[in-house]
Image (cartoon, rainbow over all chains, first blue to last red):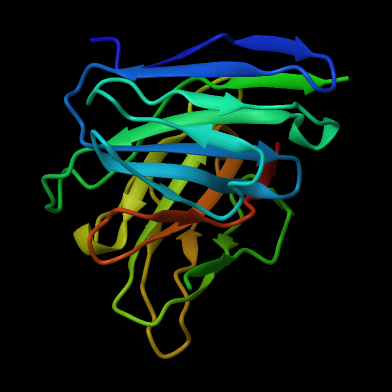
Length: 116
Length: 109
């Protein structure tokens, strides 16, 4: 069971370039999330989705876009990369079946992105 | 808006000493609260959730609605507890999950 898979693991971008961070999960989870982790700043929610075709902004959505065409995939797109987007990005998913045993997030291993 | 505050960036304790990682929250409704942990070179993972009233690896956390707190406690720290700990809050539908800034726990041998 692969869980949540993120690609790539590392990437260096030049200012102004664009790229897509891929995230896929094989647990049939309806809820998916993108977070960025900056030192001393914790995890900030960028975007989240509660199902295919539905996305919503989190705390820090500027400079990013998402789409959710399937239940499994939730790519994060960076347009015109800036140094401020240097961070570690985490994708997560969770079940929409709520109850004491399953309302937890499953995280990917992260993507370390540097914008130079 | 929902908000989670972890006032300590770093907490250093000696092995065998008690541990308390602080978490305060702001939420207009009835919150669902969690503690997540990230060990070195491992993925973030759930440690415990308030709704289950469980003790995991000797850690417990009690929701205090009057003080809007959800502090994580352990009576005797172990070296393997050294990790980054995040407090998280979910809205009622468990859709939007907000994390605090995290506290790095360092257990000194």
